[in-house]
Image (cartoon, rainbow, N blue to C red):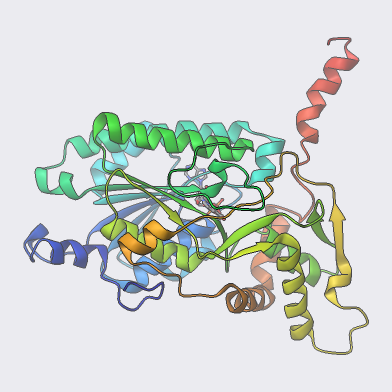
Length: 396
Ligand code: NAD
């Protein structure tokens, strides 16, 4: 059984060496994993886990958008096994040169525009990075892979990281799995769906050893403050109202970022080429219950003597346009085939997560000062502006 903890894992290098009876690559040499988007929330957690566990080398390719935070990978920055390259995945020539020069044994592709509300306000960067960027990376990866020797070619992996949002919205019952039809609702989800199709098509057409993973909502340390959990914490800690979209009854399936990273290592090590894996800890909760739990935890941390509990600051705000009602992913295939289980329960891990944000205020305050002020995004008002101007100009 592979757990979500660091214990019990073979590094990718050790696994290949084990699989090949010790003959592969002449022994348990360190292998290189090229990670895209490794200065982001999930990519950085994956890198921290790889670096903590084994002998594998990591090349982290990230163009450092507003969503990046180098502090997330500060702990590994000086390791001789780690290298950071500031580059844009949309630059196919740069990706091709980087692959030739760094000679990775696997690519784990996290880089994306990932924030749904921003995709509603301005979809173009989502199409450029998630669709065209993934296309450019796939093309460079395919040319690189075609030139590998037979052993390296056989064992090369391209892990494409995706989301349950590509499947759209569930009603009150049921779960999505790897066979669910694609029905994306937001520009973000549609751009991720397009990138999933590209990744699968590159496998079918060119044979590139692609595996697609779809994960549910992640939480944990270092998450960009625009997301529900950090936003609720930092607004509460700043004496502000805590916004809840619509009536707060929307349901999300929550996965700790370190459990996600562990699942991705299992997919990298033992996943079947050409397959998809849904990643979930089967922890579905309404947004209201998550925010109320955060408030209760903060009440406990702040202690007695405060006039009002934090929950009194919860404020229902206008719903997100096209807001999916419910997500729930069935992780049976991942559980059965790859023997992966999450190491964390949501309630305990949420407690730790809230405590982390309280203890690391300087980190999220630095983001608030530079990248995002904690205000409302995603009402689509920016998209309405040109239409209003057209109407003023007398056009239909
Ligand atoms: P994030 O926004 O925190 O990080 C994305 C990273 O990609 C950033 O460091 C950014 O600088 C980099 N990047 C963006 N455009 C780039 C480009 N053109 N070239 C190079 N680097 C670029 O995102 P995240 O939350 O860490 O998500 C990582 C992946 O996981 C994404 O593909 C996302 O769709 C997927 N995912 C996220 C969640 C979640 O809950 N956050 C859930 C399921 C799937």
